Length: 274
Image (cartoon, rainbow, N blue to C red; front, side, top):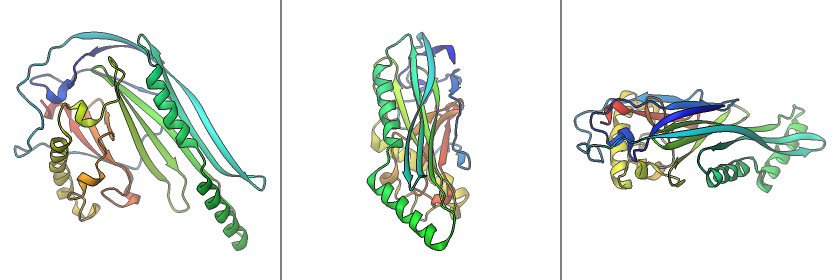
């Protein structure tokens, strides 16, 4: 899959924007794509009481840059067999980017993440053996533990955002979790949310706390009682992704709600961050 994108070399794009409309981006998905299905994403309106952690009166220079980006996918896999049967099967689709810039370091970082995602540890083997023995004693069928990691990506304003979704089969329900990477295409440097917003961790955390409070107020029973107070402990500034509609900041299962709730995302629309 290969598309030509007119990107905007803006460090903070629309997050620090003044009167910019939502800028066009390109959404590319590698096949197959596993999004965080079953998860929750809420769009929370910004009230006048919410203080933006960045200047809103800065005029952003717009300099079009052409990025000619291609993306292919390779699959990594590790398997652990127990008594001739597959006990653990881990797969991960790895993005391999190419085009007009050097993606060597970016590709190496993503490959390393996926290699770790499929790795089967000694503790994994011990758990599988215990599970196999329990099934044998109870006369029940043994179900293979399967982990699948897929990715989707989006390029916007000279920043490429890649999100991996991992689904692990469970005895009662599947566990879904996400991990994200954002890279500045000019420098190749990985960015966290504070760097992307050109703000401090403290200010971004305070900003997101206000958003989360609005979210929880809509349905308090769906979240942990102390979800808002514990945000500073569970917030991972790498867990954000760029989408067509805005910046999606997400929390993995068990962080602000029970694990069965899945991945919970807060979508901050670009047009509310002008």
